[in-house]
Structure formats: structure tokens, C-alpha cells
Image (cartoon, rainbow, N blue to C red):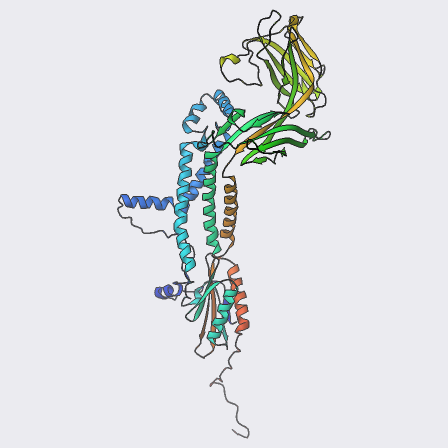
Length: 578
């Protein structure tokens, strides 16, 4: 090979017409992005003109990136500020603590960011922008796929990567070998005049389009999930169960288009037992090692019952609904009797954990059936504290030193009066409303309170009755039951977006031209040149590899013998004399 270069040739001596002829085809835009006008003067625009201008701005990549950035910024307050769709209790607490700031947040919609007007506007504009960007680019790309690579420019020497050599092979033979070689390398190639034009790297634009389509898929899946989702929580005590109906939930929230009467999947499950084991020693003492709920479930109203084990990151999936295990605690069994020994309450009382060692609090409420020593109807309430492994004896405190059920204790503060359940207002079942209740007094006149071990009984003063901590502590588990349509679609969109972005970043779009023509001396001159969409060190290397391969089919011709120079004195013939 006689000459190779990897940079642009000097074109300072070329005329403008020659430059246009040289790069007319080779410099054709490899991107399918629409071109923008760059005129310096702007004509007067009417309504249609302004509409076109606005549409072009909205569908530009610059505006799409700006909207995507604004959507990301808009999600920040949704993560930092309590949201009514997630936890209304935290929103109420925030309002109590920030009297001045809360009205401003209300006006800005920061307590419901994802359903606010401004977030929805950004979301819809981004959606429209992506569609308006993708549709014309897709049609243009399809048109490019159906067309052939452009013919070779007049002067291949002006392209970034170039090589040439002379060969004794015929031009037609070189072109045939070049065409076969390029097709074997999976180039789109064809013969155009005295050259072969080839192009490769269409997957770059395919990846670009795939990335944008994947963004639309993720936006659609996000909207679907928000509109049709449902999510609720349920605490189930060992031996208890749950049916997927609205009245069975402890709390429930759903999307705007979710139909609570028809969209809840029909299934039920019961908690057989909860298995939890914890690290006994070392710096990780108390860390869960086994944390799983064993359940029986059935699909539909008369489906066969099946067994399953639910773990923290392994939910149970039934008919499109997922049942997640999210919490665990204890429910000591308590029996309350009145002054005549009549049982007025008996059952497991769930206690809510307050720390990692499951120090728990709760309330025992006796609303019906109890009569005091005079036979008068009354209501009882017991403020309760429970620890699975007791610590703090002699210190006047209730502490748990281990989350396992090693040495349980139940502390009770006793009250009587009105529990406030007749007012018709919702009440927390784990807290005791003491506003209309009076504490029982012990013999010293102090509020009655006692710490009980399993099997022990607290005597209410004046023969008012007894409270027994039975030798049985059941466990409970809290479950989150959710229907989230669009999650699989979002996963597919995310994977497609990564694949598309990878293709658009790492695949190089390039064109190769191979010209074979006879020179003035009758010897075939082979020229090869390449043009990439962006500068890349791989293009000269690829061109050199292709040239080496073609050179084996059309080897370099030996240099022609040089003619004698007339200026050199000729050697005299034999026998000649001066």
C-alpha cells in the first residue's frame, strides 16, 4: 500500500465548488434528527407560525432534557415531605409542628406532589415531547433503512480515514472482491459506478429510538400504576385470617381509577405461625436470622387451600396481588373477669413494638358485659406494656433485652369509666383514651399498676374483678397487600432503556467507500476511505483491517522500472574510442 492517512487532507487550495462535489455524499448527515433552520432573520409569524414554532421547541431534544430534569427536581419534595397518599398521620403531625409552613405547602401542592397540577403538567409535556420527537425520527430512520448508502464522493482523499495502493488486478475484479468482503462483514453494500459504497452501525440510531420509546413506556407504566393501584395493611394474629375485601383492611388507599367494588382480587389467607430466630451473641445480637410467616391461602371463594411461606423480600403472589411481610410482634393472651367471676373478655391482645428488641405497648379494652361490684354497667381499660425478654428488675422500668420470647412480662395500668367508643369517632385500638376514665387505686391510694408474669393475676380493688396474663403469648405479623399494575411494563421499559442507551453510546455509525479505477499508466488504483458520525480512533483501525483483507485479493503491484535520465552520460559501446 502506498499511502495511508487518518486525518483530513489539506483543502486550502480547493474551490467551494470542488469542496461541495467532494463531500456532497460523504458528508451527508448520518443522524436521523430533523435539521433546524438557522436563518438570521425571522419573518412575521401568524397563529399557525407560532404554533409550529412552539411545537418544534417542545419536540426538541433540549426541551425534552429540560422537562426530564424538571420532573426529577419535582420528585424531590415528594421524597422529603410527608405525602397524604402514603401516610396521612405524618402529614397531620407535620401540620401541627409547622403552622406557618403548612399553608404554603398546601398552596404549592407539596403534600400531594405526584397528583399536583404542576407535576402533572410537566409529566404530560414530557410525554408529548417524546412522542413528537420519536415519530418523525422513526419515519426518517425507516426511510434510511430502505435507501442505499450514498455513492462515493469525488475526492476520497479529503475524508478522515484514507488509504490507497496500486494493483495488477482488474478494476471489476477488485470491486467484486470488495463487495463480497463488505457484505461478509455485515455492511449494507452495493456497487455505485466505479466504487463500492458500504454502511454499518444502524443499530446506533435504533438504540437511540429504543431509549426514547422505553422512556415513554416507563411514563405510561408509572401513570397506570398511580391510577389503578391499591395498597392496604393488615395485622393478623397467629390463628387468624384475612379475606381480600375492603372491610378487612386496617388501612387502605387506592388510585383514582381503582374500583373498590370490582377490582380487588378474590383471595384469602390465614397465619398458621410466625418463625423468627435471632442472633444470640456478639455485636449483632438480636439481628433476625429467620423471619418468615407460614400461611395457608386460597384463590377465589372456593379455591383449593395451599401452603406458602412469606419472607421479607419474597412476597406471596395471588391473582395479581402481592402479599408482603412487613412487621412482627407479640400478642399476650389476657382474660378479664368481673366481681362475680364472669368472664367478660378473653383473647390475644396485639402489642406494637417500640424498639428493635420488641418492647411493646398496647391497650386492653372491655367495652361490653362488665359490671362493677354494685352491678352497674361500666367499661374497663388497661394501658399495657409488654416485653418478650424482661430486663430492668428493681429499676422500675420495663425493658426488653432480646427480641426472642425468653422471659415475657406484661405491665398493666387499670382504668374504668367511658372508653369513648360510643361517640361514633374512629379510635386507635392500640391506645387508650383516658379523658373520661378514672384510674383504679391500690390500698395506698396510688394508681393501680402491676407487672405480671405468665399465669399471674391482678386483683382489681373492692372486688371489682381480676385480670389474668395467661400462659400463652401468640405472635402476629403485619402484611401489605398491594396491586400495582404496570410494574412488569416498567421493568421492560427500564431494561430496554439501558439497552438502547448502551447501543447509542457504543455503536459507531460509519461509511466505507472502495474505488477501483485504471490509472493513466493502465495500472488499477485502489482507494479506500471511511467517514464516521463522530471522531473515533476505531475507524482508521477498521479501515486498515479492511484494506489488509482486500489487499490479499488485489495485492500491491511492484513499482514500474524507472526510465533512464537523458542528462546522465551514456556508457560507450565496447571497442569505441574517444
